[in-house]
Length: 184
Image 1: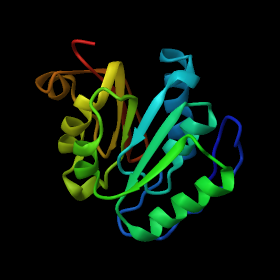
Image 2 (image 1 turned 90 degrees about the vertical axis):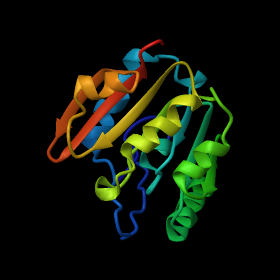
Image 3 (image 1 turned 30 degrees about the vertical axis):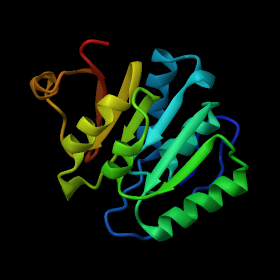
Image 4 (image 1 turned 180 degrees about the vertical axis):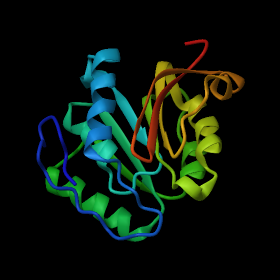
C-alpha cells in the first residue's frame, strides 16, 4: 500500500492486520482522486475528513495532493498509533488524527467545515447510511461525500436521503460513489 500522487508519492503506508480493515485499493483511489481533481481542481483549498481512517490512505492521499486540512478519525488504538507515526514521518502539519468512534467524532466537529468527507466503514457494520447522515451537516457549500461499500447505491436510495450521485464505479467487490446534497 502506498500514496499514489502528490508530494509524498510512492510513500509506503503500513497496513496493520486488524478486524474489518480493508484499505481502498490503489485503482479505486486513483479513480477517486481523478474525479476530485476534475470537480475540485483547487486542491489547496480543500478540507477533508476521513471518518473511518484505518490506514489513512484516503486522508494522506488528499494531504499529499495539497489539501489545506485533513482530519483522520479512527477508533482502534493500534491504527491510531500508526496514523500518528505516519503523520510524524511525513511532517504532515495539515493532518490531525482523532482517536475515537466515527459517529461520535462527527457529532463533535464544527458544521459546514469540510469540502470532502471520506466514508469507508467495514462492509458488514451497517454504518454506511448513519455515517452519511452524520457527514451531511459537516459539508461546506458544494461539499462531497465519498462512500465506499459492497454494493452500488441506487439513485432512488440517494434521492430518498436528499443526495444525488455525482459519480459511481465498481472495482471487484468494492463499489464507490461521490455523493452531493441535492440542494448544493
